[in-house]
Image (cartoon, rainbow, N blue to C red):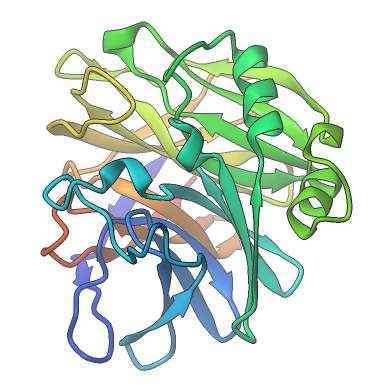
Length: 295
């Protein structure tokens, strides 16, 4: 397996402001929806290059953006996963704190529905054997009728990358408010070893599903002690996961911290992917990156 990549393209809104903290991407309307994990607005990247802001969450205690410098990092929604859902996109928080256990279902007409999913996150943590602030769900994709939700591992804390499957229909019903969040069944735990770079384990940062049931994940080797703080990224990779087989891992030529991954197209020879890269600096624009994965 071989991976090639283009030079990153910086992402900005039409007024020149940077798209900050890009953390997930999914096909949306005539373009792509990019989550900003530290803001109440996503970026709708449309044909032509510039992005439009799209509200995905009401203001939180009067704030629209969140950072350590502002003393508001604890309030940020931390939307880390984006999955197409009908004509919309489901954004999911990382679960690393109660404020990050929310979801937003966004549609192209500008509407959004927000739900507190703490019962689901607590069930996921229990299935993974995690307690306290160890939960850090950074990627998700739909496989059949299940949401495969990925825990980003942390070798320093002894937490491996893993996934659980959640009833997707029940999860959407909980977000829409037509059923309780405790109705979403959680199970089928899988754990993954993607190798290391410079002694730091590669940990899953996002995922997409292929029609044949395989899953492609992005991964970063980030040297950080916990699920909250950023650290230096010493390597990055993409991997193909298939039940019953060892993962196929291709290291990227640069340690770009890919936070979001989307499928552009696929053929017999491989797949074309669109990724977003988080600069871990709110004043530096995030970037879009085109990848080609060849079998």
